[in-house]
Amino acid sequence: MAVAIAQPIQPKPVSFDEFLARYGGDNRYELIDGEVFDLEPTGPHEEVAAFITAKLCVQIDGLGLPWFVLQRGLLRPSNSGMTAFRPDVAIFDRNELSQEPLWAEQSILTLGSSVKFVAEVVSGNWQNDYARKVEDYAVLGIPEYWIADYAGLGGTRHIGKPKQPTLSICTLVNGEYEIQQIQGNQTVVSITFPDLILTADQILNAGR
Image 1 (cartoon, one colour):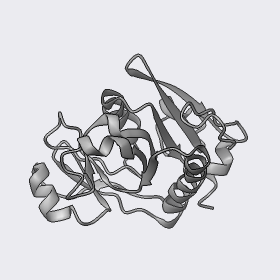
Image 2 (spheres, one colour):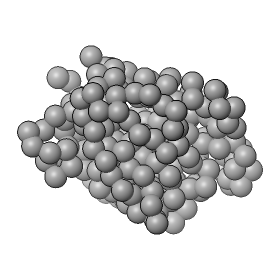
Image 3 (cartoon, one colour):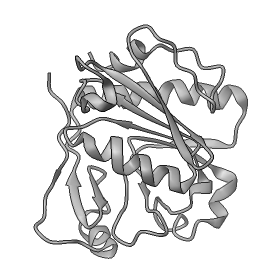
Image 4 (tube, helix red, strand yellow):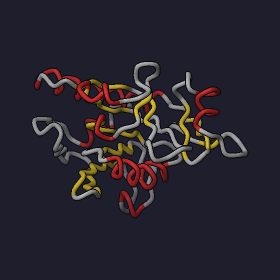
């Protein structure tokens, strides 16, 4: 199965300003601790992200929420000078955008209060999704974070053994994520969208 491969592409650390000048206009790159990663999204990877986006947009519209989905915008934690994540799917609150210092000029957000939900579709460099982003998204205070591992790439400590496609639902509790892994026909339980009716298979098989 073809999967997205995320690899660092430069030999020395890159500052946020350098990253923005070189790669800011191309949504296939993100910056983590000064390393630029080429996300190289495959077709199946993008199909999973698109499926999640479509289902959540229906929920947002049905609830009449002042939220919107921004695919591959930059999320730059304000306390990190050399990191700029580019989530596969992220939901933002329009009511919070007036507090964002960069939004008027560029699709860059820095405040966790603007973010309601994030999903990452796992790529070849799965460690970023399961480790670094779990920590940083929790620090930002993002209430819910999904890790959609449609190809079963994550380590066995994250998705079990034998490895198989897994959706990890991270729910923020007292500043840390409680993580539930679901597979097959197990049902998604979302605190952000309690009326959402989906199984792990529906999401993880969207790219097949």
